[in-house]
Image 1 (cartoon, rainbow, N blue to C red):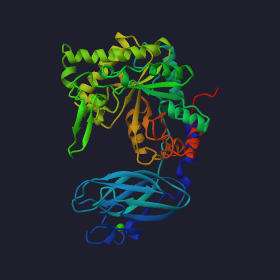
Image 2 (cartoon, helix red, strand yellow):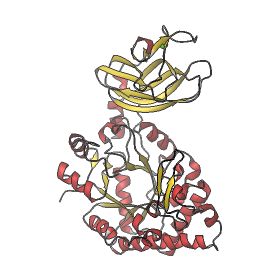
Image 3 (cartoon, rainbow, N blue to C red):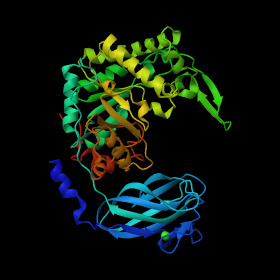
Image 4 (cartoon, protein in one colour):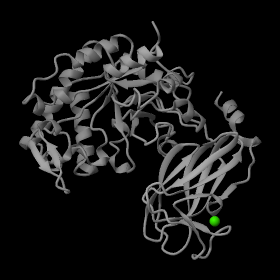
Length: 463
Ligand code: CA
């Protein structure tokens, strides 16, 4: 099946040689042609990307398909970000510094239509030069190795193992849809007459240091359980308010602007003095015991799912590598210790065997808690263009985890364009949209319907 697909879409019929577009032949908006730096291709290069809106605009005729884009450039003043637009779809990338010559860099995969296409290079950070952009038909690798069926928790319930088996069986052919919170879930039902396969929510307000200020939610867990009973798969994250040492006041940022560091921002690094490294290294310390107290409080919520025999895609300690949450503020070592401590507390001490452990992955493998503690890897992605196929992220993760772990989008700003991603060979197990950009102007009703009704998207079975 996969092999047949690959043969159908291998661009054998496409022109196999590279299409080179000399920047200096394009339409220049705020930019100029230069010839001073030797070694350029064609009749010069384009310089003067200094003001917002400065760009070079190129058009070409092509056969429809996915292409690898390469840009030849110069960045004499140091590393610079650039923007790339292909038929209106924008991505961004980085030019590494090139003291006094030209270099080429991969700009990833882009999609061309049959006939006339537009390609533009936008200012980004500016202060770089562009010699040319080259497009070569991409070889899309659709082979996907399925990960082992076993879960990190060897005592996982039959129900939990069943859900995991089902995710593995659809992996590579279908992407499950998902949405945080009721409002957007209801909107999707009303607009597309489809219910997302996954309902996601967050245990933030059950954090003990929040409950000290504001009563815990009455029915957030119970509501998620209702979704679970109605055959949605439940995904739970936890914006863990630091156990103690909240700053709890207004601060000024480096530019003198107000920065809200009150108690309800206590999951952010800037809003707490809690030192994970010190706490996790001393199991006799008061702060270590507070970590356990908090994990126990959330275990009480997860226990309710267990009592209802409902599996949970459990996604704690997300986006650690970014460092903006306190659990990632002290580097990978204390983070991995905390992850493993939580794994032990929930699956061994509290005997919660209904959890599928989801790790939000970044770039550095030092943050990975290990195969024995993770069932599935997710990315949190907020691309400036919702139609971004995330193909370089996918390709990189697939190189590292193919045949080992499932890959998913655990947060997305908007609704990811799954049919477009499939054309790039990008095949997430599932996606979950963060609230707020699912409705217009974030995502049009037309796009929502197109994606939610695509054959490659699996929604909750209709009743
Ligand atoms: Ca040139």
